[in-house]
Amino acid sequence: MSEGAQNPIRRMPDGTVKQVGPLTGTRVWTVPGRANRPLAAPRDAARPLKRGESTQLCAFCSDRYLETTPEKARLVGPQFEQLRHVHASELTDTVAEFRRFGNLFEIVSAEYWRENHGFRQPSAVVEWAQEYLADPAGRAHIESLAAIRAAATGEQVSVEEAALDLLGGSHDVIVARRHVVDGATTDDQLASSGTLTPDEHAAYTAFTVQALADIQAAQPNAAYVAVFQNWLRPAGASFEHLHKQLVAVDEHGPQVDHELRLLSHDHDLYQRELADLAVSERLLVAATDGAVAFAGIGHRYPAFEVFSTSEANLPQEHSPEGIRAVSDLLHALHAATGPLVPTNEEWHYRPPGAPWPMPWRVVLKWRISNPAGFEGGTKIHVNTIDPWELRRRAVTALEQLRAEGAIADGIRIGDECTPEDARLRYAGDADAW
Ligand SMILES: [Zn+2]
Image 1 (cartoon, rainbow, N blue to C red):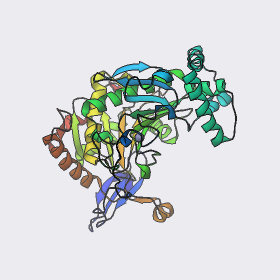
Image 2: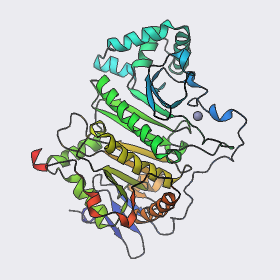
Image 3: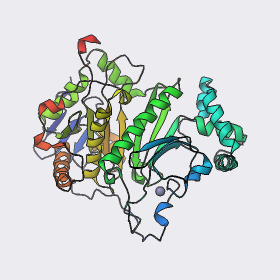
Image 4: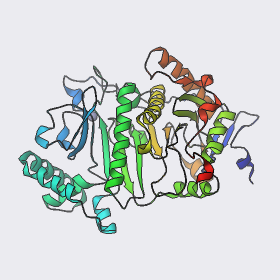
């Protein structure tokens, strides 16, 4: 066993912190003296917003509904009532708090599923496409999107084929209403996950869980649906307008495969290697009934890990309260992060066909550094904030946010958390698997 495997995290005499990812083997160093660099990504100077501009800053904005693909669902009103398949001519009849539609430029395309898996759209999608095209506004909408795609790909398809691909794809986007916060006067007052209210964030999370279940059900050839949120351009976002993405893929990818191999003889893997380690290293950041968050060890970027502590595995198997618990902690961590720090949010859960128990967990990464030649040459990643410092900063920010009433009630912060908060129940009776 290598030295690193015995010591997932240790501080050297000079203050350098060396980490090894318990599940990934990723090697990370935090070198003293680099932690005080600014977290926010450099931006152009803030620009005053003209009247009416805040709802048309990008193609995800609420005055530009027709620039995105036909809407699969939206949530409206204070109760987040769901409307499905809103007609093109009725898109502006209500204001969507959150809306879901296919990505115009998919990572894994409808053509991929058709050509590689022989996938044919079910009759419900065929009928929806016919209905959408029967409305002149719908036909014009599809024609304009097909022209944008044709210009990008150099391939012409009929409007009927374009409609099927746009309505029946397996790469969806979920977009929040606001680009900037209500009442913003400059374009840098961005509306991030953390600027939502806890209730709005809960609706966003539950809507995403439902989309995940929908895509899994609609794409029988998918082995997994990746769920993620890229926030700000340095984190890979094309628009600085809050959105999540869900992409069906026909394999799990190597990291899930690796974890499944470890799980086959150790169902308590996540408890032992991650949650217990977080407790013993005093890295618990926050907890609520149903979820726990800690500063993660061995990540290339400073990263929080939010674990559901429920017995459920897949997000859609969770009770509404279980989903809300994960949402509340995630929201609080986004709020503690602030809207000007680029982040990736990545969801992990048991692939539906996998034989071993796996918890639902969400990793939130601060994309505040750029890997460069040192990392490429050595495979040692230099991370400017070690997990203990990440926890210290988060706990300070969360206490302040709680005092302001900006995060959900019932969240235990820092030393208020107990080892019992970090008890994961995903494996149930481990011997039963
Ligand atoms: Zn926008």
